[in-house]
Image (cartoon, rainbow, N blue to C red):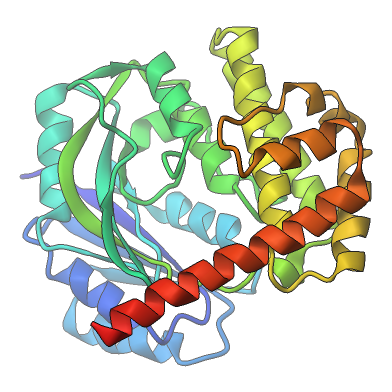
Amino acid sequence: MSTKVSIIVPVYNAEKYLEFCIESIINQSYSNIEILVVNDGSIDKSESIVQEFQKKDKRIKYYYQINSGPADARNTGLMHATGDYIAFIDADDKVEQNYILLLVKKMETSNSDLICSGYKDVSQFGIKIHSDFNLSDTNSAKRMLLTMCEGTGGVLWSKLFKRNLIEQHRLKLKSELFMCEDLVFVLEYASNCECFTYIDEFQYHYNRLNQNSISAKINIEYLENYLTVWKQIEKILFKSNIEKSTVKKIISRKIQSLIISLLELPENTYHTSYTLMTNLLNEPYIKAYKDKFTTVHYLYKPYIYFIKLNYLKMLVLYGIYFSKVKRIKRELIDRKKVIV
C-alpha cells in the first residue's frame, strides 16, 4: 500500500472559499490521504459545507472546537493525524491535482525530511508564480533554516512533513502566538532535519484575495507577539550553530521590515503612527538592533536615517508620504490594466 498522507485544514469562517479548497483536495491524483478539517468555532456556513463533502468522501474527518486560533486548530489536526506524512492547506487556498503526488514522490526518492514547493500567489494584481527555494537538489538543515527566515519560506503550506519526526521531537504550534506561529514551528522542525529538498513546480494556490488589513490588530499585544517570535527565532538559530552575526542580520531585517510596513499602513493617522513608533523604538530589544538597520534602496534610506537619529516626527511623516506615493502608483498601474 502507498504511504498515507494526513492533510490538515484549519477552518474559521471560510465559507467563501472552503468548497474550492476541499474539492481540490478530494480530487488529488494521490488517493491514500485523510483530510482532517478542524472548525475553529466558525459562525458561518463552513460546518454545513464540510458535512456535505463528508457524505461524498469518507476520507474527510471533521472536528469542531471553540474558537481558539489557528495554532490550536492545527494542533488538533496533528493530534488526530494517522498518516506517515503531514501536509497543511489553508481553507481559502487550493491545490492542483498532482500536488500531493509530487511531494510524496520527491520525499521518497530524495531521502529528505522535508519537501517544499513553489506556489501561485493569487491577489488583486493577478497571479504570480513564486518560490523561496531556488537551491540545489538536496540541502543541509543549516541552509534550510536560513532560507526559511526569508520571504514566505517559513509558512506551513506548500510543504510535506514527516509525522514521526514531529512526534519524536514533540513539536506543536505555540498557541500563545497569534502571528508567525507557523514560522516558529517550521524552524523548530527544520532544526531537527538532516536535509530537505523542493519540487520545481507551482502546485499550491495561495489566496491573498481574502486577507484583511492588519491595522485593526496593531496594539501592545501585537507587538509583544513579534518580540516573542524574534526571540524564538534567535534561540532556534543559535541552537543550530548559525553564526551570531548571521542571526543578528536576520533579526535586524525582520524588525526593520515590520517597522516600515507599519509606517506605510494607509489607515494610520499621524497620531496613531507616532504612538506606535514611540512604543516600538523604545523597546530595549529593538533599540539594541537599531544601529544594524541598513538598506541599498534610496527610497528607504530616509527611514533608516530617521530611525537611527530618533527623529520620530520626520519618520512618521515620511511614512505617510511614501505610503501615498505607492498607493497612487498602484492605482495608475491598475487603471492602465483596465484600459488595456
